[in-house]
Each structure stands twice: as structure tokens, then as C-alpha cells.
Image (cartoon, rainbow, N blue to C red; front, side):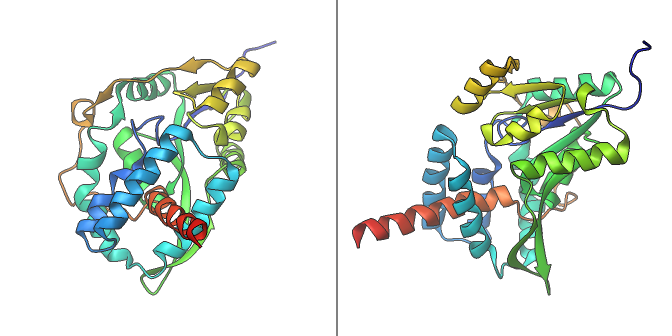
Length: 268
């Protein structure tokens, strides 16, 4: 039988897989400085994000975060958010990228594979990050905008099964043989994404993904060397990268509001 031919791809989650920490916390101070959130909300989001990063989140928790996130961003002006993220994106992303991830992206490109970033963060921020990293495509969350403001509705949520659905669509569009493709993620919520390809890898996995990877024989990788992206790729000067608020960035704030509501309920 002749060897398989045709295009293949490597699919990468973003937060804690390519970027050394979650983008949720990375932008909170910038939004506070821009007048979108209060200093108290920044501090609470930092605590909530710490809990999220160290303990992980199951599907029910993520759904609560999504609901609060939608409520929180409703009415925010898109142009204000664009300006804040455009001014700070290269400062935020530059020191957070894993050297191992950048090398792996380069290796896949050298092998002739497309590189696809698949993230629950907003498409307008994932796309410029993907461009900096040389990604060929991105799959990300889309927020609805009406009259220049976020409505609080999500038109596509790139989370869980939706990641796998979007990957299948890309595979059909570009002719990828998914059994010859690769995927990388840190979270058990991305199990559908990993199970879809022939070469899944758990990167810095949470406890549940580590258990699942061990059961299914998926290789486990450890990325631990953050590198200044400027030392690996050429970054554009400030204000040349336009982006909109990430759904990931909102989720930290949503977590803070969720914790606040829980405290009020317990106090009642």
C-alpha cells in the first residue's frame, strides 16, 4: 500500500499550551487602566484566576463562567477594547510564550504541516497572536457586536465539543487526514479535540487530562521555558496589532463575579 499523502495539520490550544499562563489574567490590569473594570474587580479576578489555574474547572463551572462573562461584557464599546488590546498585546504576549511550543510549531511547519490555533479566547485576539506565531489558521470564539458594542451574546463558543466540530470543518475544507494530524492541549475539557486526531499530546496536563492521557496512552509533554517572543520572531511595533477583547480575558472577570455571588448566597 502506498504511503498516505495530502495535507496534515497540528492543532494547538493557546492558554497554558503555547502561552505560559492564561490570557484571562494578562489583560485585566489593562482593562482597569482603560476604565472598563474597577481595581476591586482586577484583584478579585486575579484570585479567581489563581483558583481556576491551580484547580482546573469542570464543564458546569465553565458554563457558569460563560454565562457571567456574557452579562459582564454587554455594552462594552468595541473600539475602546481594540485600542487597549492593540496597545498592550505585544507587551503581554512577548514574555509568556513557551520556547518549546515555538520550536514545535517550527518543526511542524518544516515537516509541511499547517499549524492551527484552537482557543476559547476571542477570534480578534487569537488571530494576531496566531499571525505572530506563523499559524496558518485559527479557531476561536466569536462575540456578537451591534452598533459598535458587545451585546453579551456569543455567536460561536470554541470550547469542548465545539473545538472538535470546528476542526472537522477545517479538515473537510483543507483536505486534512485527521488520523495523520496532531493536537496539543493542557485541559481535559479539550479531550474531544485530542481524541479527534491520530497524534494527541497532553501538554502540562491538569490532573484529569493526565489521568485520561495515561489511560489512553497519549504522550505527555512538559513545557517550562517561557521565552521572549522577540527573540524568536519579529514583533510589530505598538499599535500595529489590532485586536478585540478575548473571551478568555472576560472569563477571569466572570469568575470573580461568580465568587462574589456565591459569597452573597452563603451570607444570606
